[in-house]
Amino acid sequence: MEESKVHVFKSSSELLEKLHQKWNSVDKVPYPAMYSSVYGGIILDPAMMVIPIDDHMVHRGHGVFDTSIILDGMKFHLDIKIPFHPKPQDFFYFGRYLYELDGHLDRFLLSASRAKITSPFPKSTLYTILVQLAAASNCKKGTLRYWLSAGPGDFLLSSAGCPTSAFYAIVIDEEFSQCKEGVKVITSTIPMKVPLFATSKNVNYLPNVLSKLEAEEKGAFASIWVDDEGYVAEGPNVNVGFVTHENELILPFFDKILSGCTAKRLLELAPKLVENGSLKSVKTANITVEEAKGAAEMMYIGSTLPVLPIIEWDGKAIGNGKVGDLTMALSDLVWEDMVAGPETHRGEHRNRVLAFGTRTALEPEPPVPEPIGTGSGSHFFGTANRRIPAKTGSTVF
Image (cartoon, rainbow, N blue to C red):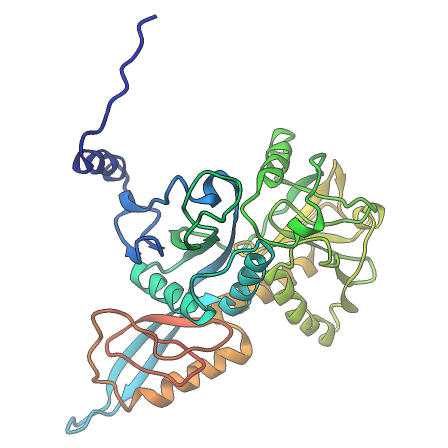
């Protein structure tokens, strides 16, 4: 057999031209923007969205990550009185925000600490980078995924030879909507991670990948992990929840599994259904496989779902085998929270934008987005006819 000759790229321009060939053939670039601390800025050319091969996250799995959701926010209609103008003028602010950004960043930095990775930036700088990246991407709906790695340096096991850690982030322009159709799951035969690794969001996802593939090979959507004591744990990249026949919402304890930000938000929102009498109680607890399979309703809980009904497990129907009413009521709570922003912050953001819109409505749009304030909860960014600053507590661009 004649050996093929491997091409040698003799210049960076030749290589870059080759890289551009791939992206020039796609109708829509799925990654509108990336940040790299190695480059020291935001990259808009997808051909340049790369990380060094000697980064320890690549060849040793020494890295952590997290994901935030980018969603359209509220459309603000402002009647602004302009000096010397006879009538109030109409202005519209189209807000986009990163859902529960602070919670995700806290978990992100906790995972990094457990992995013995020191961030090259404080949390406030990471926050600013992510908001500016999302703004630069012009993405209206998608995910923002970010990583901390031990950094590039060498190919050894220890990261001692890495001069500094690295921070990467990318915007993924993708469509997702509220899940209303039920899915089938199986019990995974792939061993689940030990608590040290399961409770941190690290890049070592081989067990998760194999668990997902195992389910797909058996005609199921995904799988369920059961811990060494026989209690239900989690899915391959989602939490799991149950509604009992007594109308109790139960999620497994987080001591051996990842503490999902969406799952925790669901636990905060679900008491509304207790107040209106739909649910009896909301709690975290150990739940056996037998108890779980005997539940009235079952669901996956995760960022882009946010609640996915499960109607069958290992060939056995959950409840009546149909999507449960309480599952969808819980899904509605989280979805509405995602679209509009958490209730306590939603009113805060709206009032502050409206209150300050009349003061500097004619201030020109800055050429480079810069954060005007910082705060907690869901963080806003976007474009308007005029720049409308807000008090600390919301971030408007």
